[in-house]
Length: 573
Image 1 (cartoon, rainbow, N blue to C red):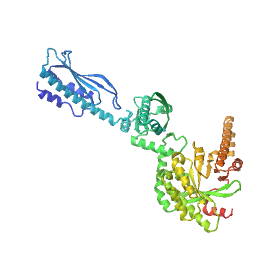
Image 2 (cartoon, one colour):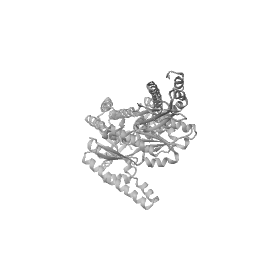
Image 3 (cartoon, rainbow, N blue to C red):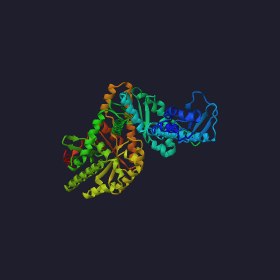
Image 4 (cartoon, one colour):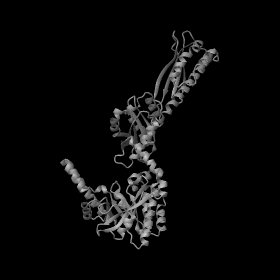
């Protein structure tokens, strides 16, 4: 037989170019191969596949597919043809002769050529399937990638069942620590094992995928949300590292998004990102749920951020001064500069806009603006012959990315010829956690110029003692959360059970012990202590008894416009 015959050409032309799998190819072969088999006396054609496991394919072992079988039988003396597949496995194509057929050397050459053609077709179909799978599969973990998640969600929308699902975003906490301590190899193993654990939870009508890095998204039924959250709260992975078996307890940050009618993958991920961004810095921000009002909040934040440049050019920001009281002399000893935004639609308090400006970095321009306004007022008071007090101005941790922050500050101070001892730069305690080296460098440089420094919200983090011992700071400001208003405590105890009342009293006693210890350690290190948020005499008396140096709060004075604060400097009540 001539393999360029009509039978062979008809067979070859009957196989479409777009065959997407071996299963689909076997169907086309079964339909078109009989004339070729009749010409060559083939009684049966078998394909046996063996492929190793990969992120895109499960392991295939001795997968036998019959491509053709002659109705009147065959002789069990196969001609076997073995090939290596694209994935490093094998494909064996076997031809069985019909009864009374004996293949000569020429026939065998034709059969081997025919087997190579089938192998090429199988390889092409396998690659097409691999391309389809890889387009929706994460190469590292073998679960869905973003495209795979898109396809699942689109299918749910097409069937009108999307509202019965929730999308649960999960991010492995401290994954950078694992990568840094164990190396990229074991970091990748953790990603794979975590994905396997997520996949183990799923039902057939659910999906999970990796969005990238150490972030994942699971799309599960609404009724199983709590079970999923409980499941991922205690995932422990065992890794063989050298000769040791190590167990790691994997914690994660999660966000729940109930899928709404008409949502697509882009909308879901966008709304999840909104929830995550708005939750930063909030209590229990590791477990959040998207709420529709977050979209309104985002719109408001975008409006605030968009109007900032014009507002600062028009000097819409007013600086207020909240006095500080020296507990030893009961006299004015300083103040804190606080900013307010005077808009056409009313005044905005700091909590309404500072976090927005900090997110986009424009807080830096505002902090320097406030410092300059302070210097302008100090210069005016000095020219009037008044003796000013030291004024503390707040600087965001965002500034620590600026290597020349100390010089920028001194440029403003020197512009108005202000003695540096009248300025105190106040940074939040959290600044030190993210970039301690930059914070330490800044404090050392600014102190060399004679400017005072302080740490705000002291005692709210886990590294407070390190900051106090390792930084050359002048003042620490105790966070007002240490103070429980006695009247509020009394109300709480009167409305609570005896057990809750005892617990509240215990917390107050514990806070008193902590405040006393911090004050004693600070004084031993030459650091002065101020407490913010003092609202009543009981708190003032307690702080005086514990040796606190200064207080600040509504008991003594509220934040004042500069004209009112000037009266305090002049001794006019």
